[in-house]
Image (tube, rainbow, N blue to C red; front, side, top):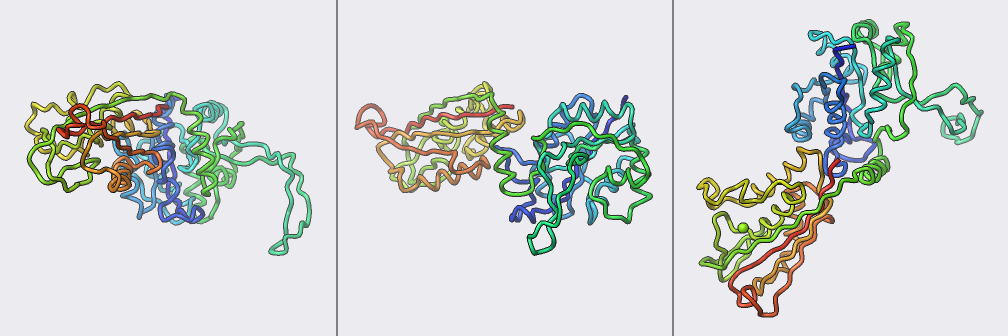
Length: 385
Ligand code: MG
């Protein structure tokens, strides 16, 4: 079978998450939920192209979430899930793929084996969905009374998941025919059109991230499954020179001296940048930003740090933690510590609790002890998929 397109439906709001940002754009271990979902399909050898359908108001969130990925412009969805799905299908009509997979953006823990199962069942069926047999006993509860009215036989009941797979022409026809109904999944649209829908075994982990509890559960599962942890170290020194302020971790600090250097001489940020590059064996700050290049004279060091972070996110990795030690007699670091952590967290879009900023002196010994400059060392742990 050739020509497999995937639609990712990302039009939902964050209502049940109690968040202003829709759930599909929230952070899941260093990357947005949507980016994780999209990447699974982009990386799948049987999927030829991926089209995301988004809410009109989420264009900026979308651009930020998928930056650098090979995707066409998003399709703007409709008011209901069914309408969004139909608009996505219409956008694929000109390419007319053999089959299409339709997937909820909020199911970020989708695995390649489930995708394989759906695609291979399409050899013999026009419509396929993954599901899980219901294991809990089911009770019907009446209105607000919370009184059980009866027990439902669960033996034939399954919970529906996505991706749901279809022969493209069949599902497009079904959506066009029943466009004014409000059906909650695409299999229901196929059923409405009289198509037989086959069920394959889904994966318990492929749940929809709907509530804050779901997000925490996904984080726990994801961090335990990201076993390839890398450690990097960085070390840097800059000498004191003329000036009345210096920059550490992006924070300007008034001081009787400045720091000398080709860039803004943010020795702390340089050490962290080298630690991140070291963790992914991507050389050092001098390889990426040669001091011989006039372009970097006086550069703000966040450019270096963001570059290192991007190399990690390009590999779909995430930063587990950073531990920085600034070594100097002056200035006093303590009063600036929290702002430094916040500055780094915001640049790297990770939680403040993953960044430690410490300081020490060398008891008046050596060059830092003689107050000739500042040294910084950093350790970073990076998780790769
Ligand atoms: Mg340096």
